Amino acid sequence: MDTSSEATPAGAGPLAGFRVVELGQLIAGPFAGQLLGDLGAEVIKIELPGTGDPLRHWGQLTPDGDSLWWSVIGRNKKSVAIDVRSEVGRTALLRLVAVSDVLIENFRPGTLEKWGLSYEVLEQANPGIVLVRVSGFGQTGPYADRAGFGAIGEAMGGLRAVMGDADRPPVRAGIAVGDAMSGALGALGAVAALLERRTSGRGQVLDVALYESVLTFMESLVTDYDVRGRIRPRTGATLPGVAPSNVYPTRDGREVLIAGNQDSVFRRLADVMGSPQLADDPRYATHVARGERQLELDALVTAWTESLTAKEIIDVLAGAGVPAGSIYQAPDMLTDPHFAAREAIIDIAHPTLGTIKMQNVAPRASRTPGRVNWPGPALGAHTTEVMGGLLGFTEADTAAAQGAR
Image (cartoon, rainbow, N blue to C red):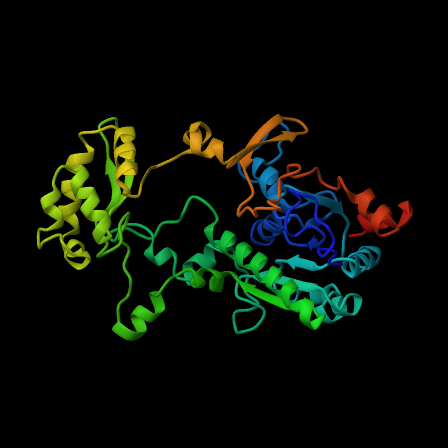
């Protein structure tokens, strides 16, 4: 499709003019679709009639039993309820692929092929289609057929091994980190493939493995072991050899994260603490020295933070150029003036809840920043619009695409 060379309405997003078909479910694939939709792409989500994406019923629910998480990950998307395993549903999908730019799927490898929707078939319908395939272990290799969720990717990609305290089993983050990483890389890969298509005129397959996506974010973990034989340990809230950089208690019972580990920053922190001599003390004067005395240095910083409120600490450190921030939860975000000034959280009209708040689009382009137009829609809300208006199917064929199992 790619009508992006035409004039783009202000605020419509840098991907306005591109059409994305989302065939995945749950988190990783749909998160990629959310990101592309946030940036202006038209995202058409294909869901199984009657049940839809299981994420519609995950997490915190509304009084009607709908997922609040779905309101976020399904935002800006058009929901089309058809069964692509049926003959009419398969025909509809191929007709949709013919007028689209990207297809996202996150089924187990081989599923599309089983449905007669291999990339070769999709490419015949549209030589320029970009297929983003998200799976646990990728489309090739001895583990390709294994089921895999983001949590398994976090484990095998190295993230879980470094999360938590050394004397306890690994812990997980309170969000689906592995899925988000994979979705973000899938969206990035889709945009890169669309840019390349302008030269070649051809689409291609993006093979996104959950464990490899996590591995991509693991810094020098593998290289550390290869060169120095070092296995990175779990270290709780700190990083070995990086000090002071920790969460510190305050007089009013809150916690503040202070990152004063760089030499020049530590000097400013020492001045604010009323102990400028620390910056010249051989025990703390260099990054290596501070790292070797991490515990005693944290004790010195703690003694200072416990004498002040969180606001007093943040204000004085901000004035001194020392990175610091409170540990925020949702209520803090909703009352923070910086969040408000940048509209980091926005109000969106919801069909049953009135107005709900959610995070805004990120990143934001200066001329075409993207926007959130509506929350996750009802199952099949756009079936008639897409099947009849865009693809030209009759009501009978649309009904057939919805009813076959």
